[in-house]
Length: 219
Ligand SMILES: [Zn+2]
Image (tube, rainbow, N blue to C red; front, top):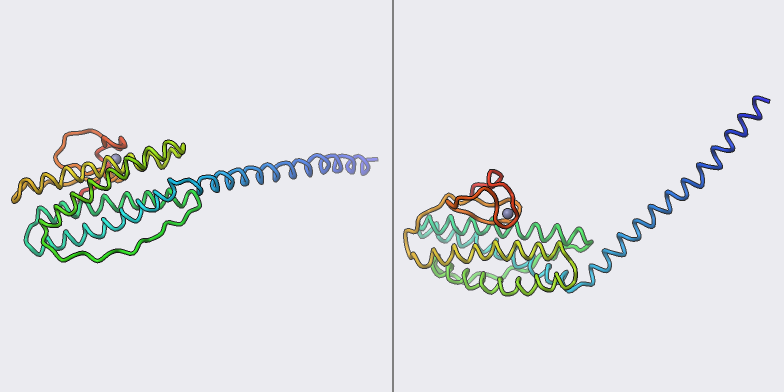
């Protein structure tokens, strides 16, 4: 009798567990399918293309600024070299954030071909960089609107941050051009989250992404 009771209990456990396992696994599959479906829908958005372009552009400018910094060093223009180095770091932060966002949507970021730089002097590079930054801001403003229209909130936030950080780049470059020589060298600090650069500004947190200033990196 005891053996029969055990058999009944075992059968009951199996009868209850097996359907539950099937139910659990089908729920998991539905969840995975949902994520995949969402990714595929996102991949079709124009914003994905805009993010790819922006990733390439940020990567390119990071590399260019690094070379401009080296050129400034050759000309013994330490202040300009430090500024370009800070800008290079900031663009790298943007590029990495764009790549991470693309990958989270199942898209592999495409590394662009980097055009060769026309030989020039550091001060010419300041002007070239300012005009590029201004151009980029117009593009990012349009890209932010597009991302909002497409309800792609993470991309809209990426473009907003890049737009504000690049606006800061433009102001720093303009200051360096206007002051011609010997503009005060600042101990540049950079927000590790959004690439915003600050000098001696008094602030508690990043004005773009609210990261606390004690987290900022010295450049
Ligand atoms: Zn920030």
